[in-house]
Image 1 (spheres, rainbow over the protein chains, first blue to last red):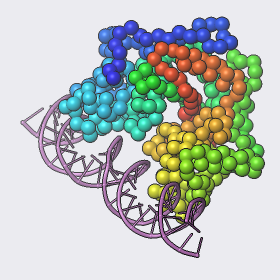
Image 2: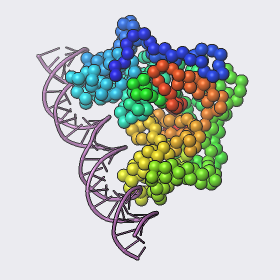
Image 3: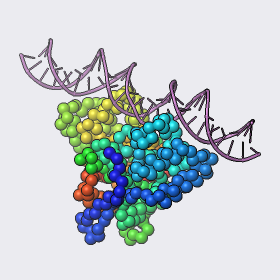
Image 4: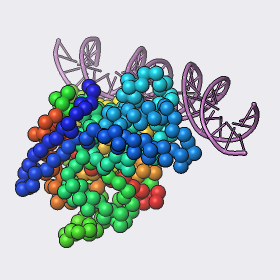
Amino acid sequence: MKAKIGQAERWVFRPPGLAVVVELMRRPVLTEQERVEIHDSVQRCLTRYGQRYTDGRRAIIEVLLTLRRPVSITDIEDALPQLPRSSAYRHLADLQAASVVSRLAGTDDFARFELVEELTEHHHHLLCTYCGRVTDVVSPVELERTVTGYLKGLAKAEGFIAQSHRIDVFGLCSSCR
Amino acid sequence: MKAKIGQAERWVFRPPGLAVVVELMRRPVLTEQERVEIHDSVQRCLTRYGQRYTDGRRAIIEVLLTLRRPVSITDIEDALPQLPRSSAYRHLADLQAASVVSRLAGTDDFARFELVEELTEHHHHLLCTYCGRVTDVVSPVELERTVTGYLKGLAKAEGFIAQSHRIDVFGLCSSCR
DNA sequence: CTAGTAGTTTAGAATCATTCTCAGTCTCAT
DNA sequence: ATGAGACTGAGAATGATTCTAAACTACTAG
């Protein structure tokens, strides 16, 4: 059940009716450099809120960086057995308040948390309808351009101010099919 | 807070860089004929599961058909004050088991329920990040074609079998901005 | 009719992810 | 060092959702 560390998994396919080759790829492993930069950003975000970047909070960010996918409270518990559950929840709440972490809704009863896109990159999710596991994927530029092109117009549309969007794919993950 | 009954609300806009006019429109009010057909389908789905289409279940379907958006348990409670909460939950669970209703995850703590797309039509959601309200929209054919074109390829991709997708737009609804 | 069977309903209890409380600890600026 | 305020942990509290057990209803066979 561990996230596979190594080469970014890559799926290449030709959508029907399109001449170009399109790729959906797993978000790649972060370099040490990138990890440091993200920790710095988190530091700044917390400081702006008059809060400290303590070991507990850093440990949670580390888990998010390592697993590279939205994590549930049990993921955190497994990775940090010594961290009390209530502290983990409070840390996540604090990190959310500081706009470092966002909570997302999945297919099961468990909340999942991920770093905000400002700290990583815009991406989408593959949600397993059987086990609830969530995988990050980066979508091709063309798709992204098309979708945002359409949805941005909503900002001017009467009645709704669009802020962001999500595209999720439901299906069966490699373990469950 | 009631869903506006009448002409389908329609927003027309020109996405930047595209020459065509694109429309995102609110799902239209159902005709009496369509309501009857949906009730018939629900009937069949339940019968296939050896279950009856009782008044309580019918009342919940009616609420879904009338509000034309994913409903929370409080929406149902408001519409059907005499129906016990536990019964409402069980009805929703039964209807889910019969593949008539699906549960969706939103931005707040409350589960929301809607008719499955087989009974209505493929659509997407506008989610209010402030009050959690969800509105249905039907996306233009071109957008739908593009997105499904890309995502269908996932079915052949290694590691994940795609079944369906969702596109949600986050922002502020007309009441909350 | 009339009992039997199986699905249905309900009120209340139970579950359990999540949040809150409070007492004790740590950090940092003065 | 000291005070103010942030942080932590253990356990209690909250509250949406699910479960339970007992009563109910619709249909069927005799």
